[in-house]
Amino acid sequence: MRVLFTGIQPTGLLHIGNYFGAIKNWVELQYDYRSYISIVDLHALTIRHDPKQMPEQVFDLAVGLYACGIDQEKTTLFIQSEVPGHADLTWIFNTLAPLGELERMTQFKDKSARNRKNVNVGLLDYPVLQASDILIYKGEIVPVGEDQVQHVEFTREIARYFNSRYGKTFPECQARLTHTPRITGLDGASKMSKSLGNYIGLMEKEDEIWKKLSVAKTDPARVRRTDPGNPEICNIYSYHKVVTPETELSDYIASGCRSAAIGCLDCKRRLLNNLMKVLDPIREEYGSLCGKREYVRELLDRNAEHCRAVARQTMLEIKEKMGLTAVWKI
Ligand code: ADP
Ligand code: TRP
Image 1 (cartoon, rainbow, N blue to C red):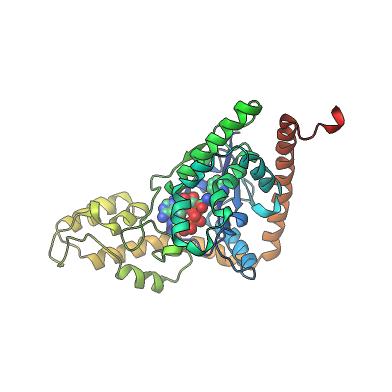
Image 2 (cartoon, rainbow, N blue to C red; image 1 turned 30 degrees about the horizontal axis):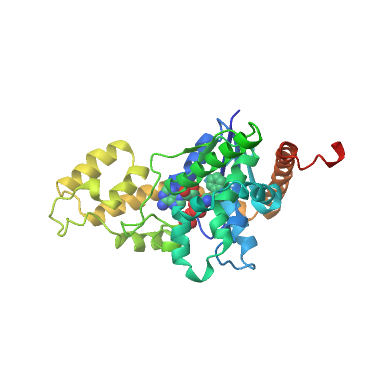
């Protein structure tokens, strides 16, 4: 089976952008690939974090992912910092990574502009650690949202540099996107993101979600209730597309919007209804897993042990190729 690898930062809650842009794909693909998902706590250190909250955030993310349908029989879900090989390989790849390219990465430019007081080397080196995550398991398929495609392309380049200098070792991985690789935030402008506060949380209360939805941006040209709308430029319609069944979507939502038979608030209520149908089972499973701390901890421990063994094997192969373990062979 080909290897799938992906990662997610434990930087707070999960939102519907994560779910429809990435996690849903992980759940579907886990049956076709040898699947690894890492909770990338080392990546999360590149922005200021609270050491006291970190363990809870990691646990909460693990529970959230299992609740979304990550199957412990099919996917190896583990905590990045529990597998030292990732950081080891990062150093090796650092010696191959072109500085100019790292400086040109979109995420580095965005994050360093937003955190002017904390432009640390880790922020620049972030894609190299990501390449190490993927390649230490010889990952080929990397399911992510659109914002991560550049990092996956960079990983492919690092694999190429290594292979051409030290001999064929790594596969050339590929990003795998969902049909909705970029979910827009409630502001109707930027990508839905924790840091921008324009999100709907997967575990948020229904009335909180309604509060946010009721004031969320719609088709800007539809000013009065009686104006016909254009679903294709309405952000609310883009959410409908991921949760509303096909016939309701075309016969009621899209045509009702065009003819002004339904208003924006009715449309948003329908959306809330359909969204809750997706979220309710996830929340139920989340609630039940939150009470099983020991069980989840044991799964993560066992998975980290497996990953350490795989990572160790790759590191031995690499070191051998690079002449790093050969002292006693002279
Ligand atoms: P955030 O951007 O909110 O901090 P993460 O960086 O933890 O989220 O992203 C985890 C996964 O979810 C990644 O694969 C990322 O590409 C995907 N993702 C995040 N936000 C979105 C979005 N708005 N639309 C589609 N995919 C997204
Ligand atoms: N950078 C990714 C994000 O912010 C998380 C990540 C870390 C990742 N390592 C990875 C994703 C390896 C895919 C593969 O979402």
